[in-house]
Image 1: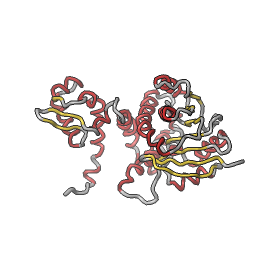
Image 2: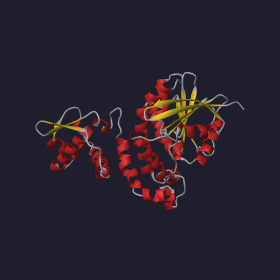
Image 3: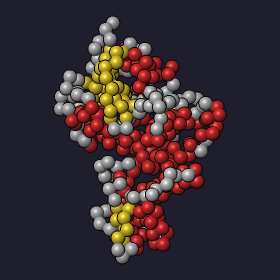
Image 4: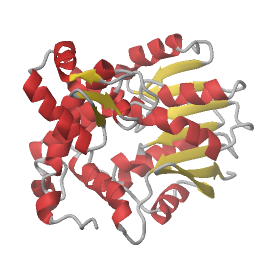
Length: 336
């Protein structure tokens, strides 16, 4: 009979993150490939000490990412294959982002809980994490790659949850390097797409559109959604944008969305939804909420809170649909 974890067990969770990060950084999933390999062979492939690597492989096996075969050989499981850059889905970039960027931020959680301020605010960098990192290209690159890995896994679920038949042109506000908009356009031959984000995302977005053969149907527009959002689309999409910001800042973004849409235009908001009452399975959402506190300064919200926030900008609520661990909330622009 399995026992419930103790505080002693739970507080060591950072070790699991470190083990998974080491596997990703060493490119172990790629090295193992489709068949089990000996520790000696893997040590040569990833340039590691053979004895130390075996100890890491044993730990990965206990976590369900590797399997131990005969002759001191190790294979990769379906779960472990998600650390392979070429896998579908692959969360390798998210593992690197979590381990190299977010883990450092979380070390100051006590200070944020005591003060109610984000890490950037406590450093005196203001309340806009994205502005504070404008001169940190490594952070931007790692962040964008992590967002791509998460978004790519959600695209099929978004297409299943919402019928885009009536749409003709979509703007993905805060769409980064274009993974979401390109996924939607690929699956809807009648759609044209625009990514609207900071100029630092433009080169990677344009390169992505060329790489996937959509340069004629997807384009990038640089700008700041606190200032204005370009018109011309009948649908605005925002994924994981509002949770970054406090209510007053969200209202500015939403007002700009309202101004950019025609009457009866559609606004799609995709976010994690905080439950009204928490269970053990809601840990991911609760931890994401604390990540918002420590990181950009926003928060995860309940469905009722999102509906109130968006309706206050003049939109009418239509429906909510599940999108994996996220939810899709559809709104329409009310008549003038």
